[in-house]
Length: 585
Image (cartoon, rainbow, N blue to C red; front, side, top):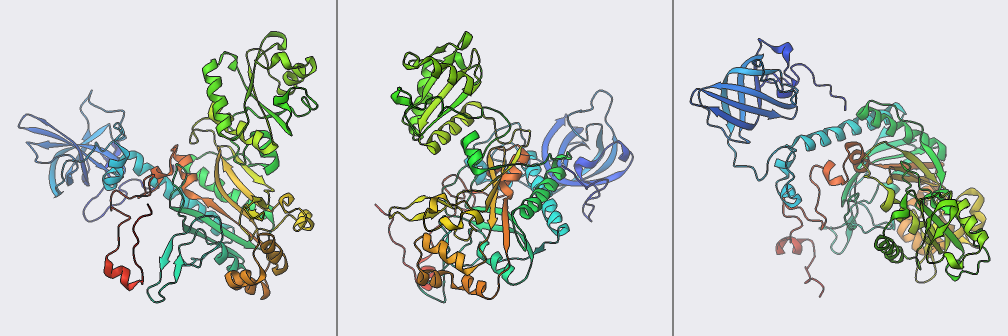
């Protein structure tokens, strides 16, 4: 990560230099540093060593006599930079060649003993870390992560500015929208019984900005969704949100690729290779997921033709897909049974396995039921060799692919934050994803996504076959963000609404402000949103976005530091026209 703070750095009236910036070039200089006491060591009554830490690092300060400080005291230290005595240099410290001598220590603030060691050598319990987050953030790892995040945000903004995008802030108090996730509701004090919601994204606002002629918009947007938390999801998240007029899909992909590339290069200092591209159908067929991790192989093989007309009941299915585990023939039977149970839990009817021996011989409980052509076809289609293991799922195409895709990652995957960084654009998503209990299609992305022009005629007759002009950016198996070409014509928007079971009257009541804007003259437009937390986590080598967010929530959605969420006082509830009900039994 680039760091532009050099030399004296952030000199103020209280300090002349940053602790971690001192080196041999400063020998002989009188300096004053400020920070926290990392460690104190006394050598009798005549000499004390105090390690002082700020966000740049640690410097050793030599104090004549004794000094009354403890770990995490805030101090200002004045002294002379000098070389450390021969044999005492510390190669593990950036300041390891020098120290401050003849120091005077001023205690700026005393501190209680910290709840855990403020370094990266000790792993504290996560609940304790979050309870004392203001201490946890002093650790070098957390300082590095948050500053890396700032570097990423700066580079993203610089790229957007350079590409002619204008930063515009959109409201945090908004009207409910059907975007597929639970929204946080905010009661109105002035309008009892009515509510705002906190935005899942600035989707509708940025489309209105396109109607308003802003042409190219972006913002680093705070978004909120009341969904279950996990490693890559928090209630609050940050995204680089953008929208542009008179553009198509390729224009947006190019703009986002340029911004993300600039951010990655700002952190790593290395060029980013061109971003791969594949359709949703190809990603599902080859990798069993719309978030393919391209850092390793293990692509799915198709055995449907091999087992067409088979007499093996287990393989009599619309699709037969296979996954090769290189060198997996020695896998124990107990582990194979575990994978079989996992496949069933994921929705498959079962999991067949074949150990491949010399000459393509197969070892499997199902081998005796196969015809010679099926044995040869299985080995040829999968490319499996002696010592390999072949896992097979026969089911509906999507089920067979997704089950093996999950097993692929669980068997052969690696931590998401581990390099190299492999990006891929996934395009041509389905417009609808299944149907609800009443048989109505459900929007796969959101209801403002433009259908693929070649599939418009299928909206009423075969809606589940309609592709969308939606696209995702994926990095190392994590979805970094998604976007689409938007519907800008009221007639097409109405057809999509009706396909979703939204009547013209309901659409006017819920989205009249948007469709009315379209009637005022809406340009063709498209956009995207990059998940900043996920991008930063991967670049920082973290498995959980909590490690790159200053004040995150726990898995249960609580904030141990502040005690949130908390009940509101009765008077506050009354002013809002609310009454708290007991929890559901």
